[in-house]
Length: 219
Image 1: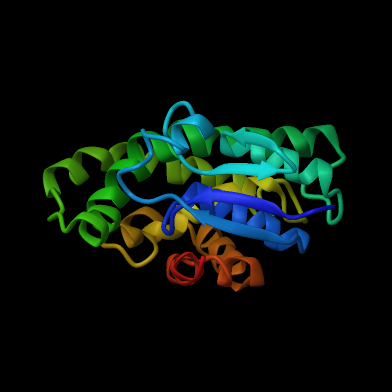
Image 2: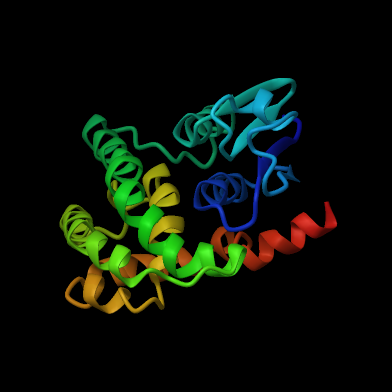
């Protein structure tokens, strides 16, 4: 199987999910950085009509939307398997992945971590504390639901790593160390232990913001 090209930017949690999945597969890939401010212009708008990242390119096949990309990688590189064989475990994986996209990112991560991390680091913005406070009730609900779904399992679909963990961890890792981290996870040690397990994996050590930024500079 020939190499993959990932069109993304350092710091994108969705880009990190794709890169970490390729790392878990031991795949050969190349990062093609998308310059800030060019998402809505050519050539990137032809790759992703909504002007987002990441986009996966593989032997002339172009694919956008992170869940589709992760499932494609797992199908064309079936070892190690990242989708459970058991239908119920696979359903739990799908459920957690949808929670990430619809409830964790939308209205929580894209608000709080933008205000705390992305805006200040990329754009020099000052966090808006009122905006953050307004997002916290939803954040508490999402984090509590995720902790309940995880339960005593090591991973979200059971005993083995799945695509759900690879999608959720980059978003949740953004909160680690923020003022909101203790209020959101101080009562859910299982979620903290899960994130520690994810961050200990070689795939996550290789795809931190700083690590991807170094790859991007060399691209």
